[in-house]
Amino acid sequence: MAKRKKLGKKIRFEVFKRDSFTCQYCGQSAPQVILEVDHIVPVSKGGDDELTNLITSCRDCNRGKSNIELSDDSVVVKQQKELEELQERKNQLEMMVEWRKGLKELDQTTVDIFCDEFLNITGFEVNDVGQSKVRKWIKKYSMATLFEALDKSYNQYDEIEKVFEMVPRIAYYIDNPDKRVNPELFYIKGILKNRLAYFDERKAIIWLVEAEKYCEIDDLREMAKEVRNWTEFRETIQFWIAEGKHEQNNN
Ligand SMILES: [Zn+2]
Figure 1: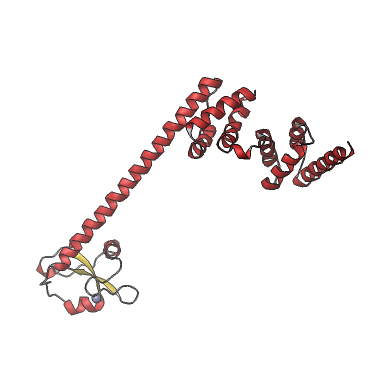
Figure 2 (figure 1 turned 135 degrees about the horizontal axis):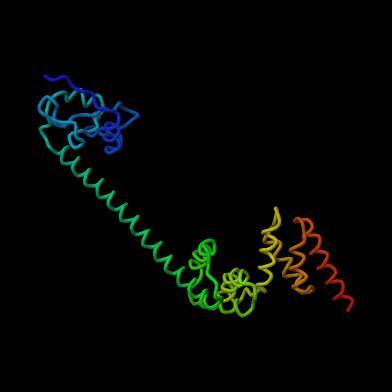
């Protein structure tokens, strides 16, 4: 009898993985039992080291079985089934990847449609950074809303960056007419957010809405560009609000 060559670690791992680290004879699994790789058709009877001839067995089942060939071929059938199932899982995974790729392509088409329209209206191309923003917008808003927002933004603003940045904000107010806040305030909030290390968006928008009653929007915008930190912003805007209220009470 030829001396039995020990199976490599890699192939043993493949067999264990496929069999979920479970003995295919008794159903016990690691770490409760020590697992070994068993030849379905024994090597002494011409069985090879192919995956289809290998099966996970615990030490007890393996030793008990010794060189006795399986009389019942149900294990082989079962293994064959598992292999098919594994192949099926693999196929399904590949299908899923394909499907997701399809979705991404559809997204890109939609992004392209918006960017083409942006180019038509403004004469400016949307760069890569802009396109990744558009990709987020199309998940939130319909194309009709975005086109309407783009028209409005283009009519309202001169600076091309601003026309672009205002699109989602205007889209939000098209879709949520009950929450109408001057979109300019969100632009100002954006300036602050970009400039200040610490920034509380929620508080900022509340104060900005309040301050707008008493201040010129241009003054708020200038202030947003000048304050050096959150504390300075907070103190300034609260002072303006207080002054505004005071003046109103005196009139
Ligand atoms: Zn076992």
